Length: 81
Image (cartoon, rainbow, N blue to C red; front, side):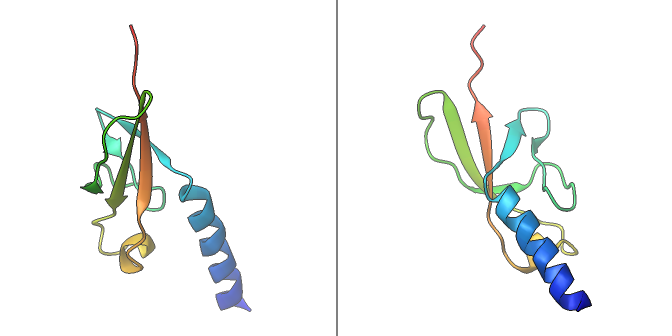
């Protein structure tokens, strides 16, 4: 039962973070599971209507998102002064 519970927790976290994490110029994208800052970007399409979407993979070898090669989407909003 413990393995099933852990998998349910992992799938819940996975679906939540698949929606996207924030991207900032200071920290880049932070892994939602292990907290690693400035995850490596592997895809970065152009700005679209004030939003920049990037796709990352966690480089922390001990992180489950790294072990399963999970893509993490980040969202940056264009700031208007």
